[in-house]
Figure 1 (spheres, helix red, strand yellow):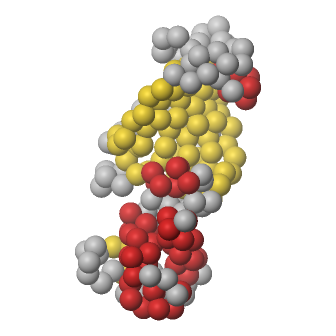
Figure 2 (cartoon, helix red, strand yellow):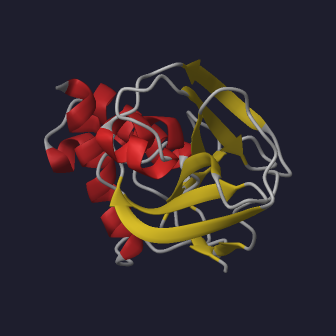
Length: 202
């Protein structure tokens, strides 16, 4: 409940940045003034502001006055199949059973046990850039080609937490399928990218 309130407040504050109420390069309101205006507790206001700071919308010392970060521009993920050139954050590995949708993508029977790996891909400054979740059967194999499709997606609470965004924030979802030389599927992946920071090439 408290986390949902913080993320709703962060989304409202982000909307004000995006519509110019809080212009880029300007001083951001204090926690106290935000708490008073929105009728929230100081703790909720502080954590909502930290969500925006973690996501790169604000800059400055955590307990000092913050400013609205100038728009760094939208980047292009030119090759969704290339190795990520920067750091990696938290990595989770599991062996779930394939859902019907995942089985369709992997060309296997539903409830087949598969390998899963979710990785936070980081910007050079250590902030999370995107999430990559991959699934494959058996041992991970090299691939000869790939195909992608791109759609829009509303971030789940878990995705938003890892990316420092608000739950329900708009994202790009890259569905990537890797194929061997014979055209058989070797691996599928979902890449979740904040839509206000990324476009996708190809």
